[in-house]
Image 1 (spheres, rainbow, N blue to C red):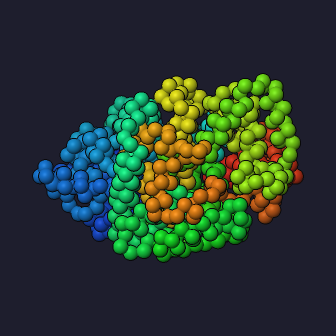
Image 2: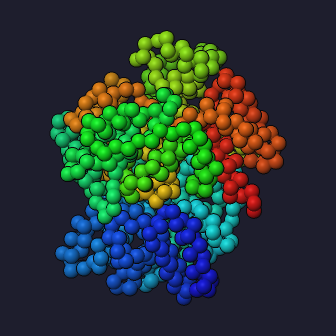
Length: 634
């Protein structure tokens, strides 16, 4: 490829991601070696031209394009200085590059605390090294087309390549319908892969690429089970608060305005409380609310903000505001993605960006500290039901689904609140989907499945059976709660939660930081005894104890709501015509991706109110919208 062609391709790949970094851009080309790097910069630390990328090392051997933040970069710079290495400029990029040139990539990333994805070109050895952070906070995609390797932060960058192969992987569609996202290492396209969290991909000038894992959550989880922390609960709590405070403090390093997302739940409230603890000025906090009570947490967030004394801003979302975003979702998410909380996350990011450039988030607390309700009622349900014959349980399933979710909601209003919860009817129907399961692993798969049998929706395809089918994981974590946590950390966390937050925040050039996913905290948490995490059938006990030193318990304790949108209601109302056009039998048959029968049945049941299929239908709708946006004109 000529120098001009290399530059044009790299420039196009950068420009399509300009929302990720609107403050500066750059392209570097070495035509003789056939390598081009491009970068879009969101200036956060050292906003001067010294932070420009792609950046060359002082020795001239290395060139880097880097996305993310290394929060302990000043400590690493000091270590370099003690070795006689002077770093030019004050950016973490310059420190990362100098460290890689001095110690090598593997040794450097071991020292890094942060979120990052970067590409490093080694002129001497003629190879590109791609690195992704431990938890998968920052994305990185790569693909091979003959002798050409492409890589970038989002799929849309690779799609700008003139010879891009946009053949859809039909097998992956089954995974997508199960999860509402596409699990790594797969993407919607046959020839593109996600670099998995905690791995290093080396692409030599000649020969095959190799992948090395430098951080392994599964190994840590197994080690934590074998060698649990034996300190006293008070000592453990003290050490964890020190870690949390340091993680939050490091994420306050910024040369631009900074704030935090606040939902009023345990995780975000703790992050904001610790921010306020170490800040001399009131923290800026932001929350979003819905007029539909069952989805609205804004009143709780406002109460927490008032107690902590933050400078609080909230936005109540109308259905029109959310609906206006739907046509833009495929452009922002690049591949089919159907977590409906993407809508409030986008609106929250848009509002927050009007005031700050960086926002701390409480994401990750549920996976790290066992916060999801399903971890506990799965155990209780299994213990209660597995002694009964499957035929008996199947009859119970039929009885539960004979009553519509809406009628279950009405019934819940007549029973004590401690036995009820928000979206009670949906949860009863979700429970019905697992009562006839044969084991805990099957229960988990069904709980995370949007379609109970996704293989029946995609004809002539075979699902990629990854870690959810790996029976040996029970050897690493024999405890069912820890096992579900681990599966979530390896799949749902990076491929759903962190993907959602990254795309939504970057859509508005907002950097989201997640202190609860500091790898030191994750490593510490895996060794905690269950008794410190789980008490009285609820998780995150140790986080609550720390939080209640800063925020009164009565402001926090309430049924867990989640962060969603009233999609089911909208599909029966303002979205009905739009949905019908995408779910019509004619359209589904012509496209050839899905079996129309089960989809049409679910749509009719949803419209009639006899069943709530909002999430299953949303997955189909998001694929259809994605297809219209990216492939229909090709």
